[in-house]
Length: 304
Image (tube, rainbow, N blue to C red):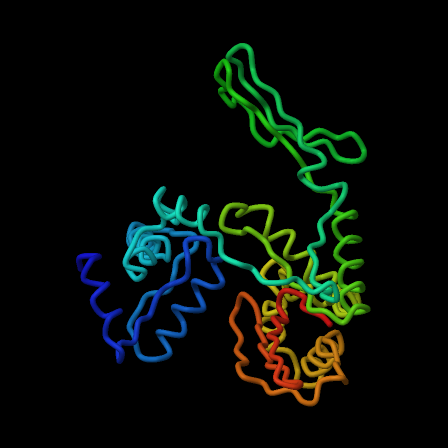
């Protein structure tokens, strides 16, 4: 099918458009959306994470070609270049939009690490001559492990490296969770997983285990046995405990719920959407108090 023909249904108010996850979607998300379609009667093959034959290689390639990065530009009736044209940018600069008065009573703020993060540890240099580089990991005992070698670098090329301190990160996350709770504000965790495909899922995993620290500490051995991966969100816990005896599974679910906030000042909670995927269990709630509305994403550690 020609890509442009996909744009036509977007103009039909009764059209139902099913779109696969973005290019950055995790494997559990991909498998979950395929299973959902299979359960509804679509004869789709499973997504072969590690193809073992030519047929599976072809299947994987077909799925990869229709991920979000390929489909989104068509459905948006444009391309993925979101830079504003010079004329639009110039007009906006000459006619700035009023942002309104900012209340000094607002508790909204941005928190970031002051040390131990990628910014604080960054080292950069410009090479004067062509050379080759080796990436080596040195642990706390001084043992060196070569991760990659023979990296060809050109004269004038910039080489840059940085690292994140796990303990400082976890302490920072714990402090911000407590601070948000004490101030009575919503905590929102923002990660650029589209660009940082390796590091951000790991950072997200630490956020999950810090927020649900009591659960991951209490059931540490059981989670190892079940193969729970916090990088996939708390939904991975829900998925992996489904086959446990009812009493054991329910005990874990109760402890998970105990980590979530109880907000007495709100008049009531109305669940508007509750669904589970193999990547993350997202519970969205609408909190109503004198007309104000807030949304909570439990899988990113939202807490009041």
